[in-house]
Picture (cartoon, chains in turn cyan, red):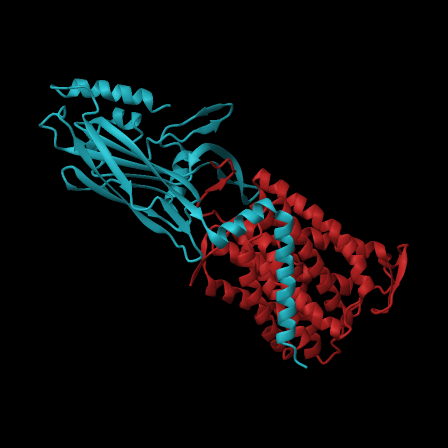
Amino acid sequence: MTARAPLTLAAVLLLGAALTASPAQAERLIVSVSNHRVTVTPNYSGEELVLFGSVEKDASTPASRNNYDLVVTVAGPRADMVTRRKERKFGIWINTDSRQFLKVPTYLALFSNRPFDAIASPEVQRRQQLGLNNVLLTQRVGPDYADVVPNDAFRSAFVRLRSEHGLYREATSAVTFLTPTLFRTGIPLPAEVPIGTYDVEIKLFADGALVTKTDSAFEIVKVGFEQFVATTARQNGLVYGLVTAFMALMTGWMASIVFRKD
Amino acid sequence: MQLYLPIADIPVNVFLILAMGAAVGFVSGMFGIGGGFLMTPLLIFVGIAPAVAVASVASHIAASSFSGALSYWRRRAIDPLLALVLLCGGTIGTALGVWTFTLLRSLGQLDLMIAMSYVILLTTVGGLMFWEGLRALLRTRRGGAATIRRPGSHGWIHGLPLKVRFKRSKIYLSIIPVIVIGLIIGFIGAVMGIGGGFILVPLMIYVLRVPTSTVIGTSMVLTLVTMVFATLLHAVTNHLVDAVLALILMIGGVTGAQFGARAGQKIRGEHLRLLLGLLVLSVGVRFAVELVIRPEDLFTIRETGGAG
């Protein structure tokens, strides 16, 4: 919903920028992710997906336009998160101030073929949410809901902590153009990536303005035993607890039999 | 070998967890304690969420105390009536503990609460044990008899009503202090993810004057039942018990405990108390240092739900 207004604006900008501007959408993006369903198995320890695609030109594409820029945004399942700040009170460090982030992606990756500053103006970067500093992270500030300036203490701490775990990342050289229209990029998924649906948004830029964009998605799911355990724990808490307790008793009993001295 | 934990949602090295279980099991077998106060911080250290660690360790302690209780039962070193009365208090305490745990988790002060209670409890109990062990050691050095001091043979505790005769332990005692002690142990066990054996044993010896022949076995029964109960409650209310993690810990723990018990028999009693006191004290001091020094990162993130 929020993307519609910037899109229209970008189209207007495009009209102004290109002299021989025909109506927008002169290019089409065709993309695919190497695996649309990542399964979490007992030996799962992270994975790297590959996204590849090509820019399809049609008759209305200006012949002079050959230098494209590409920005790929991967957003994991959204969740509410709290960032807390410790302060010294009565000689010990305790959590005092906190800020709540609402429906923010649990995983967020932004990849491009060159630095965002080279791709578009700061204004376009902000509107198109290019870079971790420009992505909308809604906070609850008192009774209001808003994003704050990128250098806000809580926001930057949030981004930094997520980045330390490899869950938020920004790489301005991750997208490689194999030919002027054929591109690929890797999507690294660390071991702690949350389970759920991941939205991939691919935006094509030319001459500092958005040309077109397309979406793709993949999901990370637990299968087999992992999924069975996780859903049982959540849906049949009592049965799960009883089985775990019984398992504990059996293990203890087995040990006392195996190691019985007399 | 990496294994993905279904509830903790992170992959862990199976051998590392097994080794941790065995090491803690060794200590617990040596001193006749559950070892939860060592296991929970270790799990937090390897990256498992504190709440999941506390909930999963409960079932691990249940396994090791059941194995211990069985061997004490064969040696008739358990007082069933005393265990039953302790359990009455223990069950209420555990329920209160799990409820407090859920409340603190929603307030965002669970980590602080866990750390604070570790500091207070471990430094106090560890300090007392260390002091007691040191004095006993000095007494034997001087050639005196190394007997446990039993001050004021008829304290106020023995004047309380509702007295019951505990036959196996050969004591005649009011059930009120027994229930209160059970309640305290159950409560801290559920909140801190510890069995509480290292507190229960000295309380039973010094406050209730239970003879040493039945004290460890009986305390293991209480630990066993409160931990089974805590596992169930954590599973039902917080959905945080990781059965896979618990199983790995149990296997390592029960194996380590057997070797620990054998090693423990080779060490003199007062040395053992001194060592245990030192161990408990150092864990407590470590938590205290963490609270007092400026943390490396002032910020923490916690998911508050609402996924999807």
